[in-house]
Length: 293
Image (cartoon, rainbow, N blue to C red; front, side, top):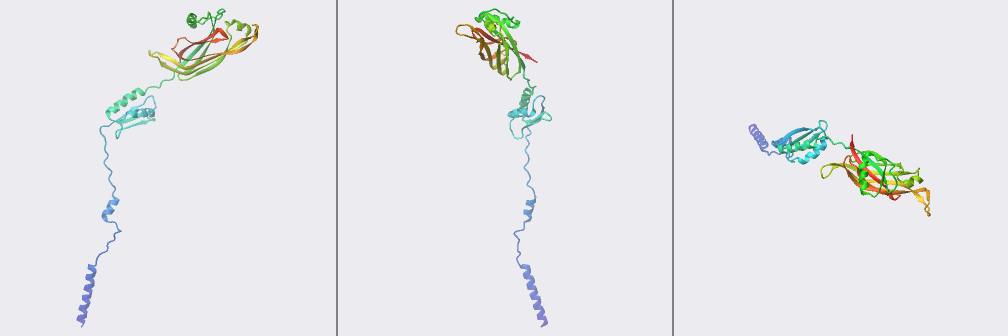
């Protein structure tokens, strides 16, 4: 009987062991697979960088102008292909260009023309000569030598017989600027009636030259252009009574000249004439200009 019990016990143990070995395995789907773990930790390689070997790099030295300003202009000459560039550096005063060789050559030529010393505005000295003219009376003021040729021409074209020099006003201005001034002068001796009555009265003047520019004319001659010139004069005129007797008092009469102006250095230009008091007397404005340091 002991033999049967021993055999039965061995059979049961054998059956349990066999069943345990043949039982199905359970798989944990939440755990990452070895392949997934490898792909998660391995970085994706970057695509191979394409280098355009046809491009040329050259550094240019800037001597006179602002490198940043020049670079903005030169970028318009770029081919704009991938890899091209135009960079500026103020510290080293350089411009670095990377482009096709033919574009680099064009940019170099343009830089040579643009990188030049900045032209300083010209200093100009204007001379405004005030002359009076009258149909009567005598020339009592000696005319400056430089104005004598002008007066000679005026005598041929105008109906005034007597010309007298009043004053010359000097003003300096830079190219691109304006001039504005005012002042007063004593009455001209040629105006005999006014001098007899109004010896202590003065004539007041003012003038303004707007937008002064140095340029060239059609013949390629350098000229000075004044877009607008305004000249004004306030002259005392005696007051007369109805019976024709002169009263020792005066009203101020205004006269003005308004025009554009173009003149060359050193030449005398008659800007215009304006009547003062009556048609027998007039003021004439002559302008000249020269460059000064």
